[in-house]
Every structure is written in C-alpha cells, then in structure tokens.
Image (cartoon, rainbow, N blue to C red):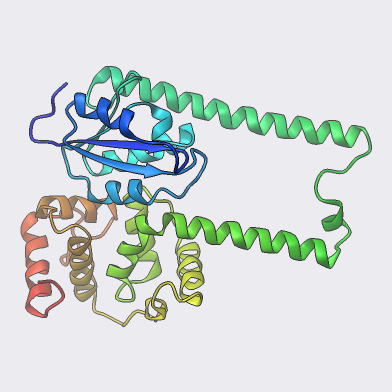
Length: 296
C-alpha cells in the first residue's frame, strides 16, 4: 500500500559484524524504501542507537519498514513499545513478511493479537516462576541466593555490582530516546513536569526515577551536572511559556495545534485557567518566548 506524502524508511539489522545487511536492503528497496538505516547488534540487545535515532527523526506520515519482525524487536513487548512510539509521532509500521501494516485495519487487528500474546507470555512466565518456587519449597529448598539469605558481604557486593552494571547499561542504551528532552526542559522545569512530558510521549518515567537516572549519568560525567539544579521560581504564566518553548524545541516541526494537544494531554491549563487550548494561546506564549530569546 502506498502512503501519499510519507517516506518509506527501511530498517535492516544483522546480529554480528561479519554478517551483511545486503539481502535485507535489496528486499526493502524492492518494496519502495529510498532510505535504509542499517544496524549491527544482537537480537537480545537493548543497545540500538541507529533505531533510536530513526525513531527520533521519523515524521508524521512516514512508514518504518522491516523485512521481518525479528529484525526490529527483541520481544513482543519491545515491538509494541516501538509501534506505540511511532503512533505518537503519527507514523506507521510495516513488516514485509508478516501481516502487519498499522495503516490498515487488518494490520491493526494483527497488532492487537500480538498484544494479547504479550499479555499471555507475561502471565505464563509469572505462573512458571510461582510453580518453581512452590516446588523448591516442597523439597525443603528456599528460593534465591543462599549467600544473600545468609547476609554474606561478598555475595551482597556481587549482586549490588551486577545490578549497578545492568542499570548503567540500560541508561546508556536508552538515553538517546529521552535525554534530548531532559536537556531541553531542565533545569527550567521541575522533574515532575519533565516526567509527565516524557510519559505523554509513551516513555514511562516517574520524577524520582528520572532524577536518579540523570544524577547517575551526571556522576559519571556523561551529562552536565547543571541539569540537576533546582528550577527557578516562576509565575504560572512564565512556567507555561517555558513549557511551550521546551515542547517546541524538542520538535520544531510541530504545529501550534499539535503543541496545544500535548498541553491538554499533560492536563495543563491555559493562562486564564481553561482546560482547552487554542492555537492562538500557544502562539502568544511562543511569541513571548521568542521575544526573550528562549527560542529562535
């Protein structure tokens, strides 16, 4: 199916450096993809910098195309998260060898089936875990690490170090998808505001977890410590002005109406206290932000 006005962007991934994406690229070009993004990385790896960059830059009406679902996602839940991100940006997804094209009713139905599969998958894992614990306890064995149960310092230190390493790896693998927004909004906005803005774009954050994550990266010199500074006190209208400026800076291509919709999703009220935002209200705040140099 053609998508008038939108680009077909191919994504090709192979698992190791000695493999080539040529076969995938050829199939994607035959499907009409003029632009193809390639990546090397394990299917189980969370580190997909090329994919993260593609998802940041994709525009409304564009279609992300892959040869097979396993080239894109490491799990059903990961696939659903990527498609949700695309949907937030009014873009579509298509897999050439699977019955999924989110611009068609049939493709959306297939996606709903995948969602049900993911829910069943989580339920089965939980059931197997509980069954394993019950069996172990019936045989007189306690679940978990014996060293941890005995509170041995070396065992506790090993587990803590492993958790920190996993935490750091996850932050490094995903920061391209959320750190640009943090850089635009902090420290002018509270952690609560930034977390709400990220969540509205499909990224689940709490203010505390976001502050801890940025603090962790700052402690390693990966981001400026200025991001952790206390936000300045502002009048309500000044806060709205900088929020509108921040939303505009994260995606300058957004229309005034699209910014108004985001503010409504964030449950922000207009300077006059109304729940419904108009394009003119957004324009007034954006013009004020330009007058003082917050945006170009």
